[in-house]
Amino acid sequence: MPAAPGPCPMDPGQMDAALRRLAGDLMTRVGPDEEVVLLGIRSRGLPLAERLASLLRASTGAAIPVGSLDITLYRDDLTEMVGSPIVRPTEIPFTLKERTVVLVDDVLYTGRTVRAALDALLDHGRPRRVMLLVMADRSGRELPIQADLACLRVEVPPGHRVAVRLKEIDGVDGVAVEAC
Amino acid sequence: MTAERYVFPHKHLLGIEPLSPRDITALLDQAQAFEEVCERPSIKIVPALRKKLVVNLFFENSTRTRNSFEIAEKRLSAEIINFDADTSSLNKGETLVDTAMNLEAMHPDLIVMRHSAPGAHALLARHMKASIVNAGDGAHEHPTQALLDAYTLRKHCGKLEGLRVAIVGDIRNSRVVRSNLWLLTRMGAKVTLVGPPTLVPQEMKATWPSIEICHDFDAVIPDQDAIMMLRAQFERGTGAYIPGQGEYSRFFQLNPARMKRAKKDVVVLHPGPINRGLEITSDVADGPNNLILDQVTNGVPVRMAVLFLLSHPHGEQVP
Image 1 (cartoon, one colour):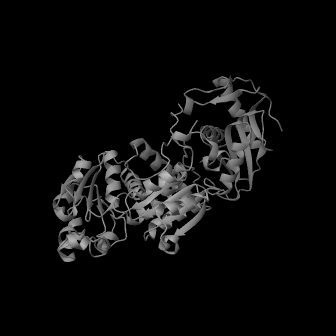
Image 2 (cartoon, rainbow over the protein chains, first blue to last red):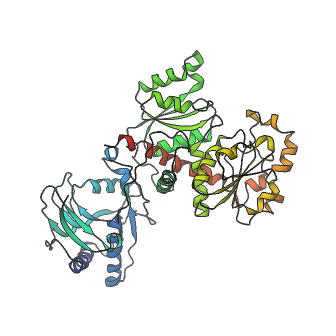
Image 3 (cartoon, each protein chain N blue to C red):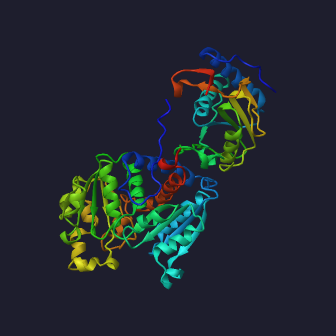
């Protein structure tokens, strides 16, 4: 079920509205008997997951647990990386067993990060199901992976990247398409 | 806000001496990420060293270091070969370099080696493409022990800078001390070496000018944040330097009477194996201030961090 394509680039107001819509969409996609947890993929997936959790708490009163996932050790290009990969802690202070895990990331591009994230999270337990929620779903998939929920879907010409910026990390909110 | 891309610039870990404070911090920070892997309730294995071949080459006895390395390697999904010096061609007269060349022909990615000759690792590093990890060379260095000591101290005390650490006992024969001195002084800790004059070479102050040397354990105790007891290494000839074990214990044993003089929250470390009743009494070694088993636990994530950072592109190989 593709989300309505949002404006790109996005300004802070549009981004906030898009996140609220996404939080609402998420609730329509899970059943009343499902226990939902959010797992943010480091680095920008984590503040996104935290924002979604606080939006959901405000609208539904539900306290949804948030964890973080660092996928560095599971990357398929680990041996080809330039420079030293820096692994940050994965923090999942709750069980994943029988939960509905919502993986949260900023941009879905090749799908390789999500593949690594699936491997990483399955090492922590066996969830009932896993959903993928992203801020921006862009063209260029290299693996058969798709987002369940996205704020915007964009066709991006080669040589360009979708940059999602967040106050928590970048000091400002916004989405931009840039030449790389 | 992305931090400047840090590159661990070393191909080998021959000792702590070549490491900068930034390198040490990078290793300790990585170890923290691997501690999470080791503490998982579920699967404690990550695929970070998949398809890498690690050779454990131990020419000297070791139980805990070797096991710790092997667990670290397994948790990183490495392929492991244990090269047993007892059954090797060394007994048939092969030189170390010949052994190394034969190993090299099998294309290992990492070699973890313990050898009684100081500098054996540097020799090997010149002949091999693999990364060499020093797991102890004579009385020279034992870098992963110093890293796990530092990790344990940093985790418990919050930081290393300004920390007062007494290292007590058989300083002369200890490679653990040399690695710890490089590390602790480089990270800004204040180190005092304590032991009988025969076991604390005065010339160490020439190499590490910031350290203090004291032969009166009782006088040193009250100021310390951490006390690192060393094993009296009778198998390395410690006995020749002291009048007797009783006298040694009387002046340099960490026991309940001496613990009463220490800060309430002082931490006690020991690299093991412990000579219970000689350099430390059982009630102290098992007491509330001891971090001795924490050191053993922390050895695994610290060694994972070392293997991980060495097995990925470093300074000179990065285009």
